[in-house]
Image (cartoon, rainbow, N blue to C red; front, side, top):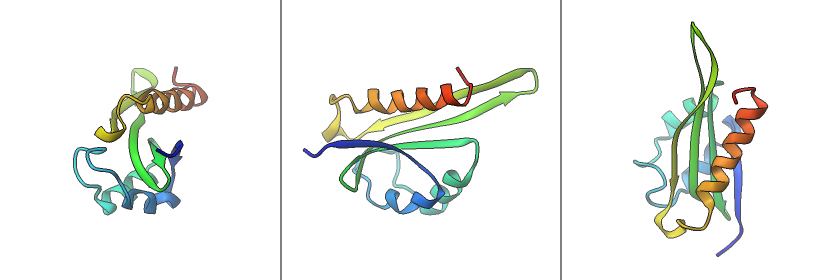
Length: 106
């Protein structure tokens, strides 16, 4: 097994989502939806990469309401069955929490 790298994707990283291990997401990645998601300023997506293969992901967003301050909201965390129990989800959530802190959401 290669080293696992955690990285937040931006609009320029759409191609990364063309090589995803089975069962990381609930469904196959729809590139049109992925492009819109990565371009949305309130949405955030991190991936765990083994080489160029996405073996895990975490998605989050900035949420607020007229009577509440901004909050960070974790939508989903997924890790390929072949890579579970290796601490990948913990590392992904660590990246999400660092982002939330930097955004003033925690």
